Image (tube, rainbow, N blue to C red; front, side, top):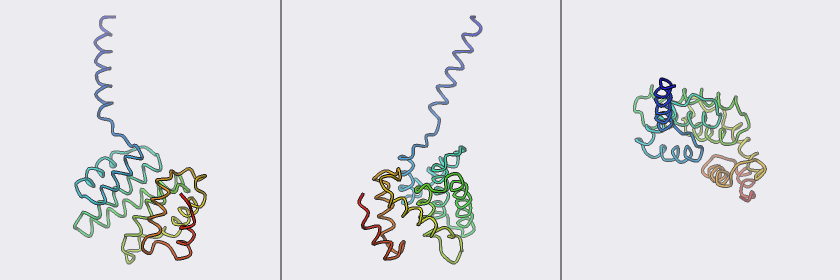
Length: 177
């Protein structure tokens, strides 16, 4: 019995130490970190490092992992590195969408990335399908199981610039959130 006690104590200490270093992937935190990463290179690097450690299969967290790769393309100078970041992001987005085809947040993240990729690269094939999923979920709100805050964010983004046609914008303006 006395020989087991030190081993049990050591095991407990290791578990406590590992629990403190475990990276958290809370969606509300990821949303904030992604937004900050799009504005600040240091935050983007920290966010990308955190997300590169993610190895699970939650489709929404995977989408943020993809977004972290894409946002790094904004901060690298070398065109080859930019292209590599975007292609890595695209592959991870494909995995996330395959796991949950109709999740509006996954589609929103991919749409925001693809929308800002230069058209001549032909790396934005999902804009229309992603937009349809987003608009459909906004029309179904609140039954679409997205939060009011996220629904507003998605709708407001779609209403800016050339993200939607005028007819789509009229539809979106009629949705009360």
